[in-house]
Image 1 (cartoon, rainbow, N blue to C red):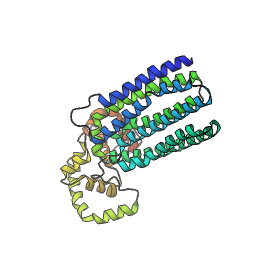
Image 2: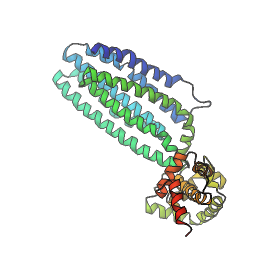
Image 3: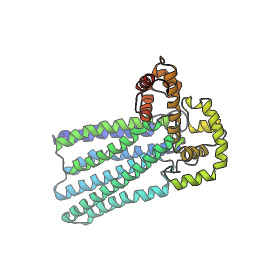
Image 4: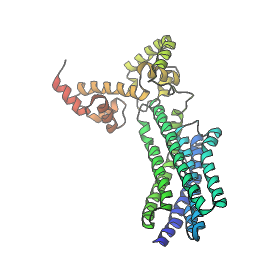
Length: 380
C-alpha cells in the first residue's frame, strides 16, 4: 500500500499538478490583453501548482531517510510546502476579488508570516536536537494554523465587499456566477490542512483516498480559473473603486444623512431623469449595468451609486429587481394567460429560475402562486 501511495503521489499527483501549472502559464486566453489582476493571479496560481508538484517526490525521498533526522527533514519540507502553497493560493484568490491587491507593500506584509515560519523551521532542523525540533515544529504548525485563520478572515472580508461591488454594478446576479471562487478557497484550505495532517498522522490507505479527491479538486479548479478569463474583464470593471460608491455604507446613518444633505439639490434633478427613465421602462433592458444607466442619464456611475445607496437604501441590483418585480406583477394580472417565462423576459430577467427566486424573495410566493392568489382576491 505504501508503494502504491508513493507511485500515485509521484506520478499521478505530481504529473497532474505540473500539467495544471503549465496550463495556467501557457494555455491561450480570449483575444485581447488579459486584465491586469487576472494575469497576476494566474501567475501566482501557476506558481502554487508548480511549487506543490514535486511535493510527492520530496515526501517519498524523505520518508525513506533513516531515523529521527529523516522524519524531521520530512516534517520541515512538508510544512514549508504547505505554508508557501497556502500563501500563493490566497494571494491569487484575493487578486481576483480586489483590484488594489496585490500591491507590493501589502504582499510583503502578508508574506512575512510564511517566510518567518519557513526560515524558522529550517533553522530549527539544522541547529536543534531532535527533541527540541519536535517542540518547535508543533509550535510552528500552530503558527501555520493562525496564518490560515488570518488568510481566511482576509478572504471573507474581501469576498463580502466583492459581492457588494457586484450588486452595485450589475442588475443581474453576477456574483452568483463567481461563487466557485469562495468554494475553491475553502476547499483548498481544507485540502492544505488535510495534506499536512496526512503526512503526519493518517494511515497510508486514508492518505491515498484523500490524494484522489485532492487531484480531482485541483484539476477542476485550474480549468475554472482558466475559463474565468472570459468574464473577468467585466468583473474587474465592477471592482473599480475609483468609479463606484460601494465604499459608502448604507447602514451608516450618519454617512447617509451627510451624503443626502450634500447632494440634495443635485439629487432632485437626477430624480426627475430617473423617474422619466422608469416611466419609459428602461429597467426592463437585459444586461443592465450601472455604467449603462449612468450613460443614459448623462451622469457618472459613482454619483448614481451614491444616490441609490443613500436615497433608496438599496444596492443597484436590489433597486432594479424591485422595479422589475413590480412590473412583473402588473403583467401577471393584466395578461393572465401570458406564460411566466415570457413575463420574465419582458421585465429583463434572463432566466425563469432567477425570476422565480427574486419574486419569492420579495413576495413570499412564486409568480404563478401570486397570480392565482391575486386573481381570486379580485380588484381592491
